[in-house]
Image (cartoon, rainbow, N blue to C red; front, side, top):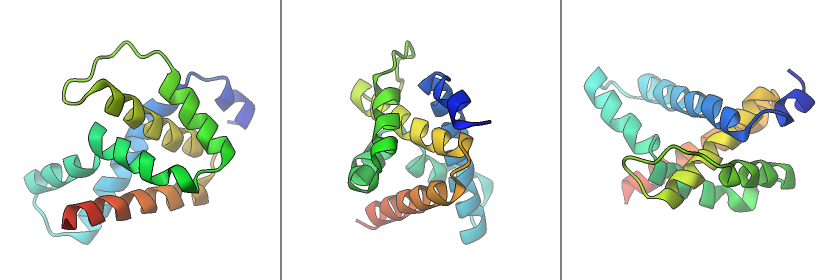
Length: 132
């Protein structure tokens, strides 16, 4: 899929694929770096994959994003989403969706190296928060 096709998609489609890409990254990290049983894996995953954590990650990443990436974030954050968040406030939900949009966009345009950089920075940020 080329960048023109991806840019014509709804940013919510980017967020849809970004959500699964990010969660798979977190699950792979936990499975390969811990000896947790499935229930504990699920509990630990939720520390990484939730609206508040993802909103905070995006705010932390702000200074390292390119102009193109900031535009992707802006477009995703500003897209009308008629889904109401269950376990977070609306602002965190919008920023979490924007984070997922960025992840999905990078995945879809096959910027794998940049995607990996952002995912690893995200992981470091959550691990740092977890130690506090």
